[in-house]
Image 1 (cartoon, rainbow, N blue to C red):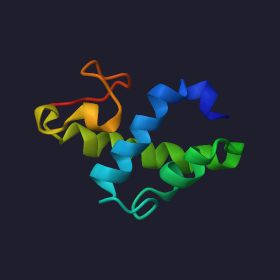
Image 2 (image 1 turned 90 degrees about the vertical axis):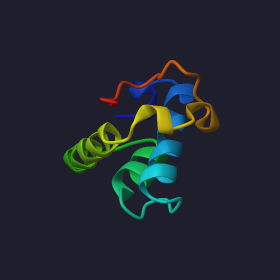
Image 3 (image 1 turned 180 degrees about the vertical axis):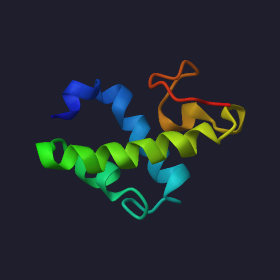
Image 4 (image 1 turned 135 degrees about the vertical axis):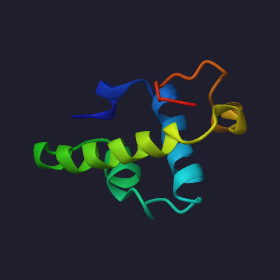
Amino acid sequence: MTLTEVGSASDVKPFFNLVVSLLENGIKGSKYPWVTEKLYSGSLTYDEVYKIKCELDSVSDKFSRFPRNNVDLQSFGMDKKFPIEFKWK
């Protein structure tokens, strides 16, 4: 699996920026190393997919708790139309 299968760089890069900035307090890999380091690096082995999925489930849960109006998406390289679907409040 490669990032090109997930989405274009213009959609995926802001996602990683959000994870690092909002959930890892600016320290890449501190809470979600499989997502922000391994997935970001560009490819995964079949055996790593489960670890990534677990972390992505956690990321999705954390994002679902953020009130969307408290996050300036444009500062993360996104327009107001959120390119990656999350369950925002």
